[in-house]
Length: 136
Image (cartoon, rainbow, N blue to C red; front, side):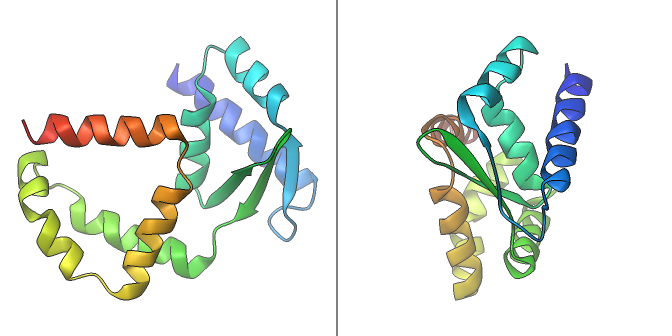
């Protein structure tokens, strides 16, 4: 299943590039993207998460999805944040969350807020669920 998702992500990237990405913002039909994902037995929100991890932002409009490149500065900030968390035991992560947040620069905090705000409701629910699992 992971291979199927990787292939689909790669196909989306190729389609975006064929339409001028990353220099241009590119829209694709939202409903069609969900249909294709469903036909491949994939969760489109997971695909979007993978694209975001590769530096591709998205914004869902009424009937289209707009893709744009993450500004390099924000991408570097996200990487720096995740590097701090890498390898940390989930229980330690929750214990140290406050100190991690307090040591972040205003730009890093803003990047975290933007990342959270760009999540879909289901992604936010999943994040909350994982946080609860880490802190029983």
